[in-house]
Image (cartoon, rainbow, N blue to C red; front, side, top):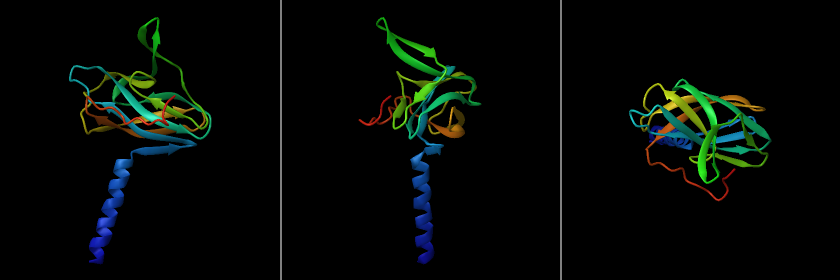
Length: 155
């Protein structure tokens, strides 16, 4: 009976870790890095996440073996047209929550080496000005996935 209890408790703890999908580096918390499943012919994809900052920092670079090239991008309206462009860094203000989301800041995978399939994960290394480097697992979600939004999240 006691053995069953401990096995059940261990499984419960393990499942909580799998669901959490959060990372900490320096004074940053990175929550749920994700990408959408790609069409078989797609050569590019976006990666998204939420970063909570307890200190000023910057996201400077991202890299992954999932694509030939990885860039940090920004999308914004210019003269009534939505434009996407690479940027050198994303500023992470102290006490702030920065959302990398569709239609905003995001990480662009250029030249996918294979299609992204729902349920898979792939590693991505993020480089921050102060916190340094950390590797996260990017979870591939359904093509229609939308991250839950919160009134406390924004950039």
